[in-house]
Image 1 (cartoon, rainbow, N blue to C red):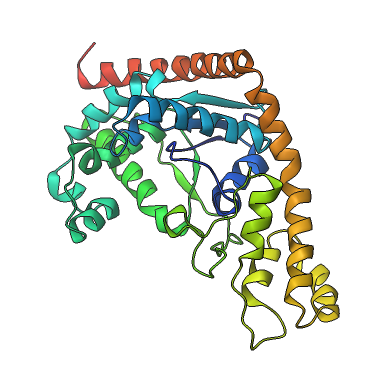
Image 2 (cartoon, rainbow, N blue to C red):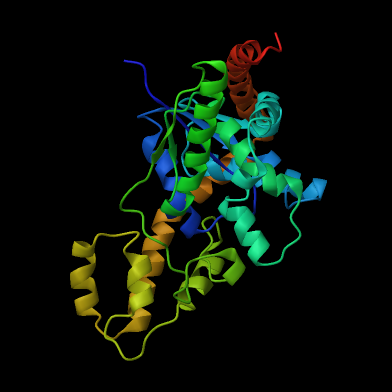
Length: 314
């Protein structure tokens, strides 16, 4: 049977942490055998906030290494840069011509920026249509998202339906794919792990960097079980495995942090080594992106031929 198509991607935004991994990246690895998988480097989306060419190139390279380091297999998935495929912006423009400003003003990113009185560029305002194009261009059946990102899929489905109603049945309606057991990953201070809070444990950090982060986890001196330590530890071991360990070391925060540190290092070192392997072979990485880009481009061009004919451009 033909596999269903999964599409996902991320903006190149910097060094990943374990919150990024367990919150999103792990799903891509877990699902790569189940679906025909397209993983996109969303560098056009990054332009809404990054206006430094050197920085964007560096962050893009870092994200490619991240995807390869966590275990995405270029023989199983299609890894490509959004900006290498002209169909993304071509289709986004067509969608924008079907979309009203009040509809775009409902987008969470726009409303959030407006509430914070940020200066909003046109890219931020129009980004739901570029995201809809990202998804619909590849006939994606499913898109992995967190619960707070469901609106992205709603916009894509609405846009597909608008186009189909205006020009005939052209796009399938994608479904969101929400992994139910994904929880918010806490940072070392108990808040959601986020670079903006400075409370992260780096995914590809050195032993010293990870040790420093783990030892800085805030503990509750009034409890036998340090809540924040345990919440992070659950990412790496089952509660059944942790129960006797935390009973044995009840109230011994340093000992529990030492065990957590050992478990994190055992988990991340293979990924760190795989990332280093690809980092040492830039020609191989370039070839992976070239081949992924060619496959994505062929699929996108075939879809755009149908779209252009439907709207009267061919």
